[in-house]
Image (tube, rainbow, N blue to C red; front, top):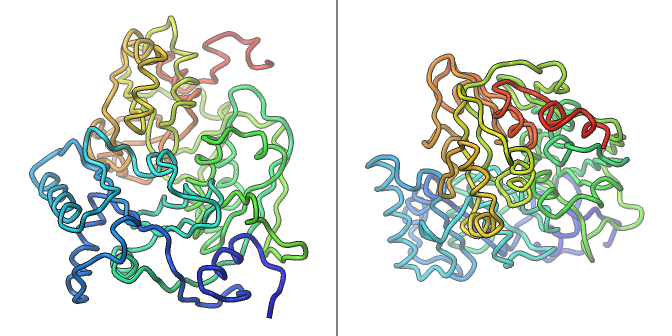
Length: 413
């Protein structure tokens, strides 16, 4: 029997072939897309073999991206990548993206234009929720579950409750989607939305650029959420649909937010940590490595130099982003400022390579997690912020409001 449903419930009902679904119900759902990387795909491939399955359900519906440890950091990484490469070739995987053509998977998939509103994607990486910005139900699963989805094209899923997150007001200058995500974490905590679907709405969200929506949905999982989503088109809440929670936050006076060690929900306004010295700044990852992020960082770095005691690493999230940044002159800005520019990779975000920290070192990064040891030694510390704060910090040598670097008037712009 039909009943009013939220956007997520509508998507799951459609993929389960049901007229309606209820929160907490387990459904057997058809999947549109399966996603995996060089860490998680080899495990899924092994599980498929253990299941006695030697073919994926549709080679045109599986996306494989070796983005975590490539360029290979060591022999083990090279072996993992080879497993992925050989499987892709054997299976005739259409969407396999080799080094030189790839990018960080959660930035690459939206670029491909293959995912549409109302689609259901499962990926063996927790930040698969990023693609909820496209109006899809996109969620992270374990490698065993992914093996099932790749082999059968179906997977069981429990219908999550929907939490509506409504942001109102016009964002101040130098405040963006990353700050909204960190504000959310400061309010809900890392377990405040466990297995819920976070539905982002409100005038602030409506005014965000598409890249900002991706950033916002990307960090839904940091609150424990099963998915983040920006409803669109036919995939909006029905009138009368019931959400489990509805939060309304006015962000008109929001300062840049900073997550302090050792948790993404240990968030404070930037004024509380200004002056904290850093050894390294990283701009990149599936959270903030898109063109809009590089443009924002370059606006602060133009004509300035990275502090002599700071290493700055800029990582365009995809080859396309890298090329567009190059053509726009952004790479010149970074290099002239004294930053290092890397090929697309997850790299330092998970302590993989291209910026691992030594004992006692401090990093400010635009990445999504700062747990103890996440980017290197357990005695290192990582702060999280948006690209404007990261660029300003690289120039100042310590955490600072961007307005302090480019002029106090900009803070009131």
